[in-house]
Image 1 (cartoon, rainbow, N blue to C red):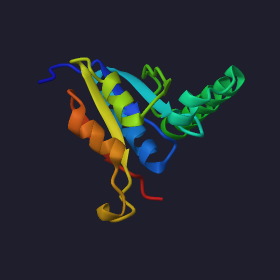
Image 2 (spheres, one colour):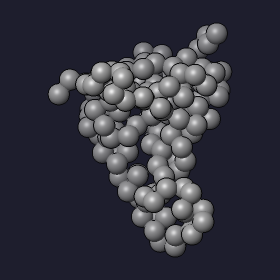
Image 3 (cartoon, rainbow, N blue to C red):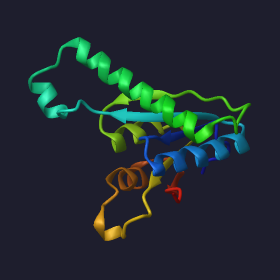
Length: 150
């Protein structure tokens, strides 16, 4: 059982559900005096399999990272604005499979993981693979934030 949360990791993807998760994570981090660590996980546009077989030039890889960093900064700005002035925020962009990367980031005993989920469609219309993977495999507490109403 977690006695003290020192970091709150939030899966961010730029969606309404991601923004809701980021706000919930910021609330939790602020309440607990923890560091907020928004994480955006990305993959090459053509997928990891094709990238492994025919690697892209380094210039393309830099563009993917810069685009992911921009999306993460934009999501943080939209979700957090100036509502959390004293909060320590350490955003990070990581290449890989979102569910696995988020679970790997949240292995510390003093970590909480926050992910979003879309509530706009019935559950049977989509499977929420990232949320499901995190809930099933994370060794830390996982909070699931419903998407903001638009």
